Length: 177
Image (tube, rainbow, N blue to C red; front, side):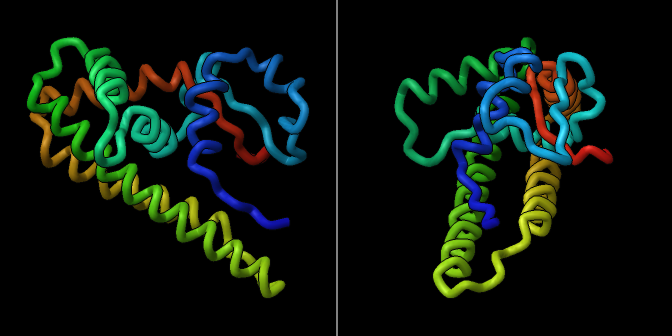
């Protein structure tokens, strides 16, 4: 089976799953995947990997170039949920995660093109596990940039905010993890 990534599908867990109970998602058609389990951050935030949480936050709060006024207002409201964060730190976060989202979108488009090419010729699709490791490397790269850019107090506040946001996330993970 070919795996094709879609940016909306990657945002879906952060936006929609966080609003649904685990009972509801478990009973939704197509949501039961053998060998995978649903992890609710509400019940077990410690089971959501930090890099996954940062990725989800970057995707939900980040904006691609030339966002609408409404999108910028939404982003500003999300960033305002870190009370006491200096404006310079908030602006830096917005700029950096916007760059992340742009690069991530490019990675997804490239991956999908390789999946399509493999399907056309009956070849082997690219390995999704490799792609997810590349995603984690990208998150780590942008986290390093954030750490170098934010004030120490801003970074501490940002890291704490991400940990708090895990309570609003749900992910799927292989059963053995």
